[in-house]
Length: 346
Image (cartoon, rainbow, N blue to C red; front, side, top):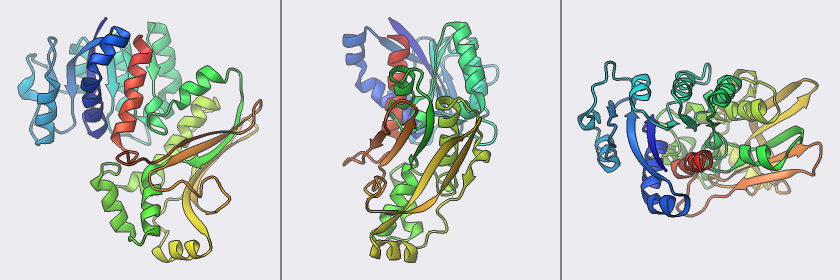
């Protein structure tokens, strides 16, 4: 079966996904009978391209990564060269939504997902705003169209977290969770423990692609807060906005504090927690001193992990450990999108 794909957003994650799709092209056809072409790409700074016959992904990657516009490789005149026009005219079967996160409203990602579902496309996104601000609407719309809305990459990269609860824990009630869900801050704090300043550690994270040019979303706790809100919204069936999460970032953690903690056999971690409180959920993201006995103590570098407490089973933990060459960055997140694609269409 041949699928036409559209990319809305073509940043680090989407480009990693494009490379993964090309690398796995033979395996997709051999193991799943899936072939694909990319018929639409929309970027924030490098223009848009639509080609019903297929866009050359290698050429698109080369243009974007050299700072050039991809409009030169389109063969279709877009009345308005924007994301919604690409969705409308790409005639795609599957849309990957990877526009920048809007913590307050989830737009324009929600509008992108809505337009794609209305046009009969499956949707996968790494954009947490679509889940926090549009989960119920987009899930209902997908069901009404006989399509799927998936978002496995929004928390812990490509780890199948939502799918695990959806498929392996029927009727289980999630009561609480706790863990480290922002790889960037964990890597910053780990490198500060090794002697770097806060600014040096941030610059390193930017250099390997896991921190944005403006790192405030990570270091001020917004990324962790919106992930907490997404988990509560989906897994605890309790709509929660990041503004409702008690949030403190890591800017106040000094090298002296890290050094003192190390001398005491402790470590600073940005810890995310959520717990049911009647019909509501109390949630918090804040730096905490963890002792060596804590399961969070050994999570260094870009490692992340969560422990879930349900009403039917003992605590269930998921961890993603840093491996050489794998820095918790775009590649892992891209795999979650890739897996969403296969699982939606196979």
